[in-house]
Image (tube, rainbow, N blue to C red; front, side, top):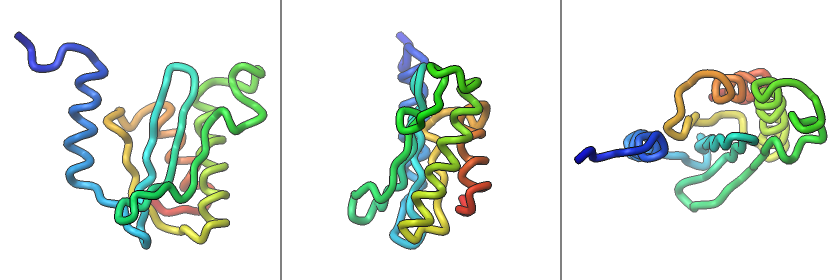
Length: 122
């Protein structure tokens, strides 16, 4: 019998492998991404204390795909810009990007580019 049966199980196994190697600190917190079918969520986490420092999602935006603002990739870019703005207000300039087991492609890549464009180095 197969060890992992669904795409979700495979993604979670990849995420576990990635998380063993990534650690977020106060100087370089971890930028974690979660992608659902409809929305995308991102948060900046200090793993030493286990606290979320800053968070943003497509549900925070006034313009999202339900309002006809464009594609999910364009909305992910806007979420990245929003997260970068909030991170800079909190005094965060550096981060470690945790793609959450997803491929660095499409919405995940667009979110990362938005964060970088907003002025946070990840």
